[in-house]
Length: 549
Image (cartoon, rainbow, N blue to C red; front, side, top):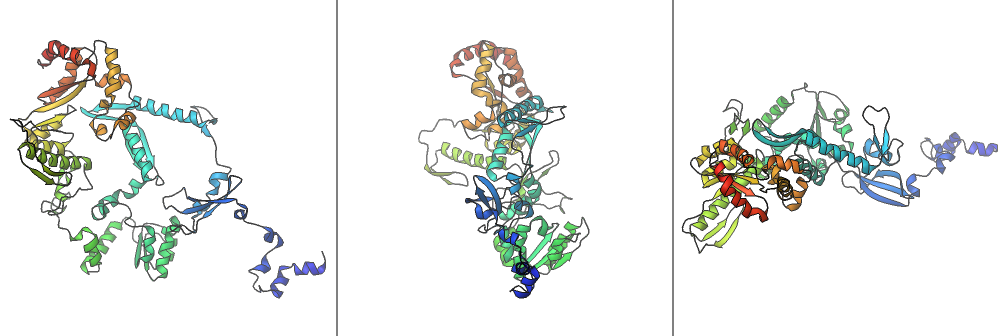
């Protein structure tokens, strides 16, 4: 290398003689740096994707060469992230190429010191076997005389990256297994938002998408280090600030979000509610609310029913509280003159009560010989009439499962039907106007002189009965019943359904209905080919024994 070449390659010489006098551009580039090329340049194709970490949904571009991922970068076309990725999302490549990434299942046996590799199929079978065994070992049919049909030996904890469809399937799977401890990180975060936003906006969680922050005039961030915890989302806060929006950070700590805010409010830890109450009071007192928006898009313009009583009226509780059950009846929380489905309480039971009440109204009108034109919340009946009326209208029964349906049955039905011998159902039915009306319990049995054959038939045709009403009422069709009962064994069925020709077994199964206050019991024989021998056996042996109860 000559002196001239050496001098011309000297960065200081290039800085003094070239177009980069500050030495921050071409003058500082070495020959090695000039030879470097980005991994994206040699990629054969680019596949669009979504970051697999949090639920923000940032777009990613996956660069592939020789069917291997060589680089992952932010997608500039994403309306959510616009090419940005947080540090975790920027390191997504490590999921595919990192040395710590495992490509096989590892299992450490009890008391073993080392991990051993397993193929995926074997590992999945082991998980399934443990789920079935744990469920079987920890299963509870009753507690304190109440049917619970559950297991406390299994729990589920989901994350925020699970989408709606995945959460739906997870909930259905574990409900079918009798698991009651089903939790999700999103519920922990957003349980309070349902109560706060559900009535006004119809749902909890965020009421708009994060990009709308850029159009805000004032943004209050309380209890969060937004700038560092959600850097991709914080871009919209900074765009609002560039437009002139005022950013206020309320937090005892001073952090990066505080440094970027126009105002940092260092409240004392634990005083959040008092601070928010003061802000709300100031807004209302000084009439600084956005009145047009409040009236048009929130429930502020609605008048609450006169039946509603607030905490200052009832010493800290709301109206509708049942102190014995520690449960709220939200019917007094309705708006005046409007009947809406409350986002609280036993939502399914509330819906059943409304539909059944409307159905009974239509049926009674038809049985009275009326020409029915009904346009209700749940049913539309157009110009309907029964021409051949019975001499005596048949009694109308309503199946019940809780206090609300018992109240409806007591007020509207001629009789009540239940599939579980719960004294609470009968007392609730009587309390709401059902005293003196027939109370019918429904119970399956499977008669056969061969008990094993009876158990097999009951398991084949009616094993779903052991799941109880809370499960069966949610199943839409045969596939659902098959899925919910796939782990029910013949011996499980034999414990819940009297099988065979043992009269005493049937009597003992019926006895709880009698003790609970039922006036009649409907026995459902399983198996169409065995009805005649069942009826003959019932007439000569079973019914005489039952009548002695």
